[in-house]
Image 1 (cartoon, rainbow, N blue to C red):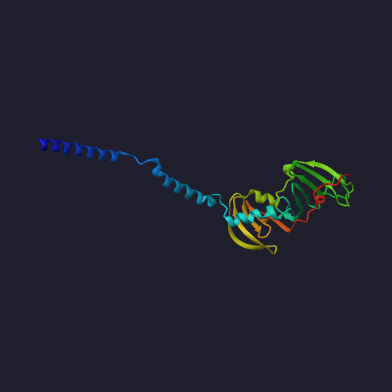
Image 2: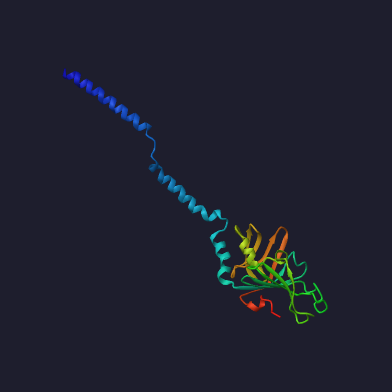
Length: 226
C-alpha cells in the first residue's frame, strides 16, 4: 500500500515539474529586462547628436565668435549686385548704410540723385539719400523697395549656415580664414572675429574686402535730419 502511495506521489511530482518547465519557456521577457538595452541605444543616439546637426564643435565655436566679439562691421563689398564696382558698407545692429556705384547719377547736377542707401532691418525700410557735399540738393530722395535694395551682409551669411565642414585654411586679404563647405555655399571665415571674408554660391563670388570691426558709429548708419 505504501509503495502505491509513493508511486502516485512521484507521478504527481513529475507532472508538476513538467508543467513548471513549460510555463518558464512560454514566459516573455519583461519590459524591465529590455530597459538596459533601450537605455544603451538612447545613449548611443545622444552621443551621435552633435554630428547630425552638420557642424562640428570647433566650427560651431568659430561661427559663434561673432556674437560676442562683433558690435559693428565696415567693409568694401563686391558681388553680383555691384558689377565691377565696390560698395562701401557700414553695419551696426539692425541699421545699415551703403554707398552704391558712385557714377549712378550725377549728384552735382540731378536734384533726384542719391549717393547713400539707409536700411533698417527692424522696420524693413530702405531710404535713398544724397549726403555728399557735392549733392545739388541734400537729404532724402526716395523710399526704395526693401527687398530690392537689401544686400546680404557677412553677418547675414552667418545666419544662413545650418551645416558646415572645414575643408582648409587660407589667407584672405592677409587675414587668416577657415574655408568651410556649408549649406549656403563655400564660406571663408575670419579665424579671430568669426565673420565671413568671402563667400561663393551658385557660381557667384561675394567679397567683403578692407573689413574692419567695431568702429561704426550710430551717425554712420542713421540718415541726417534736414
